[in-house]
Figure (cartoon, rainbow, N blue to C red):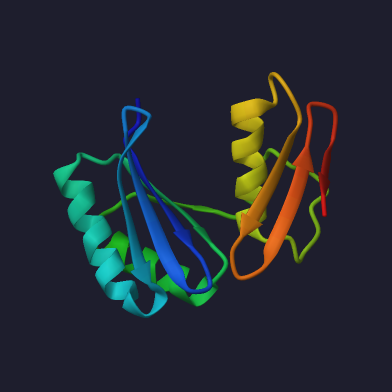
Length: 139
């Protein structure tokens, strides 16, 4: 199983989850103003926990660019989740945030074999997404 660090860059903070053997092993939060410290901590975690890859989902492009540049200089394999890189949802619109796409992907992976899902995300804005096995609807 691939060990990875997943990074969610929101409007106010950077949240990092370390997954080892498919289970969360560590969770950390950094203020958006501490991007360099977050990048350094991610790099240290990658070394100490034998991480294979780092996945980044961001609604703040300048911060994700800075974080990715730091990690790539330190020889980290980074995958950025974008509307273009995902293959789960088709017909997305330009202003659809990648955070909402990630929410739908998680809901589909966790629940769609059995039931529909409603995801409510209480971030800077409160959003909701509804998905089922037949169709996806984002509102």
